[in-house]
Length: 121
Image (cartoon, rainbow, N blue to C red; front, side, top):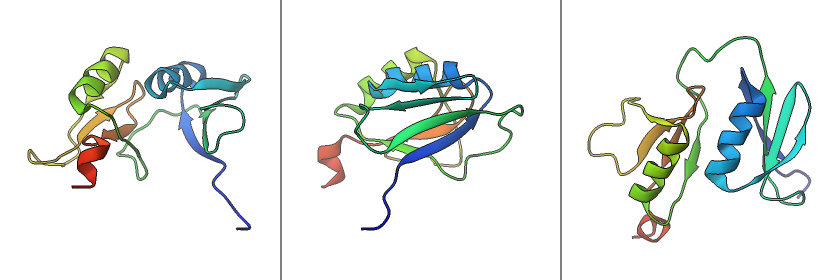
């Protein structure tokens, strides 16, 4: 293949702080950091990574793109991630949704899906 996904870019107000939140959520590591951006990944050779880019404005509307996380135990992971600084949000998912929608400390929505084994059922 001539192209592959290298990293996902996320604009944010505080790249260093938001990257550290996601390092804890994903159990990844900081791969690069300077005043304008912080790059995280599973390790230096694993793709894709996530780059957090410092921008002056704050998030104002629902994300057009979001991350879906697949846990071994949805309830345990939702509680853990909320403990790291996330919060539950309602983006119109409805009460019968099988996923939990959360927002990171800067308000970027993401979903915690059902456990991987039940996704195949």
